[in-house]
Length: 216
Length: 216
Image (cartoon, rainbow over all chains, first blue to last red; front, side, top):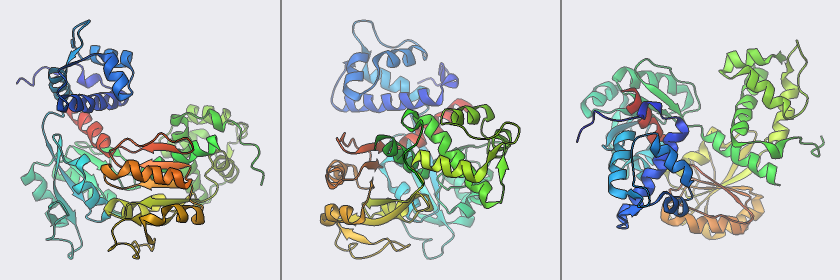
């Protein structure tokens, strides 16, 4: 398999990325069910997407599908996974072995064909040496730099209190992770070598509440 | 305080809602620091927003600020909170007292001036009767309907395994919550009386990974 040609990836917007991630999941479902070919209309109907948008997103990435026949599910799935860089399992480490960190380390969302959580880190000596429910080891925070290198971790997840987040993020970036997913309500970075993505759980709740206010 | 006039709320897009939520938080920070008035430019510089977008969002909601002087921080904050329906604490219940549920029940993001988690629910008898770290009681799942009514809960958070999510969501909607925040990787609803918002944690990780692929 060649990795040289990944057309269009650098042009993907955040919105297009999300649509294509969802499309990739839908294709995985169809593959599990034994579906060999699918049209954009059938995809749209089945998974609540927009057929024209699917065709446009894929046209931006190269040549897929045959007019009147549809897309080859297996082929589209593997090419899309490659384009999105989701065709191999990236190693993830989670900093903070509290409830949130353990929930993420054990979640199916963070452990599948594209990601694998290899370690949790904590400063609490009572937690260090233990394992999460699914067996992810809890390592001492001071071993973070060495472990990230040994494990080949590319992504670090911040599940620490806000006050600890900037320091933990700096250690992750210094240890060489390329991406940081920040669940702490604190500003971290920016860093030269690492991309930061913030997940704002309060904002999820607020936007739901505003929709309730508008409706009620 | 009158609640009759909430101009524009029903016209708010999801994107505008998120921008205004962030603006409201920024105003809270300024108020804590004792800042009385602020210009859109100063807000934009300080909090990494867009000054023209701030003025446009606020103009859509009514009359705010004085040209050349700026916005009265306290006044804008209280009017914005009222418009967004974030000027009172809504009662939240969390279904699922596993790691994720307990993390959410204890988080500052879910307990503040706009939200308060009043109860966790679980089917596990070993958990029921206990409390989360911050003291949120863990109640038996079969008491959900009665408790939601007694507590006046408006929002239910789903922190259960995917297989349990549709049933739990139906019980929440049946119990009368107006909004459901779904963390489970499962489709729930739609319901007539309750708005569902899905939080897709896998997608957060995927969109970070795609950005890494594009950069590397």
